Length: 110
Image (cartoon, rainbow, N blue to C red):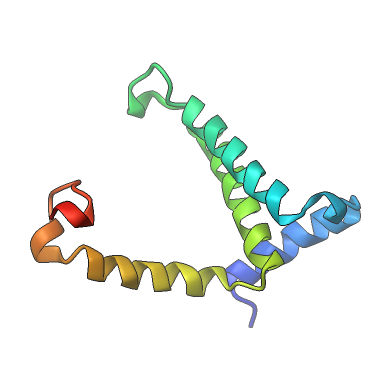
C-alpha cells in the first residue's frame, strides 16, 4: 500500500515529468524555490493580524513550499517521513518538556 507521502511525491514527479521540468530541478534551484515560496507565505501575514490571513491563499503558498520540499527530499533519496520523525526525536532531546514547556527560548538558553 502506498503511503500518503509516496502518493504526493509520485503526483509531483508525474506533473514535473509531463512538462520536462526535471532539467530545472537541481538541488540549488529547489532550495531557492523553497525559500522564495516561503517568502510568499510570509507575505500573506505582512501588516495584518495572523488570524486575518486568507485561508485559500495560505493553502496555495503552503502547498508550494511543501511541494518543493518533497521534490528536494526525493532528489537526494531522503524519506520525508523518516527525516521529520528523526528531527522531532532530536528536538525532544534538545527541548525536554520539563524545561521547554510554555517557553519559546532556544535550547541553549533553557
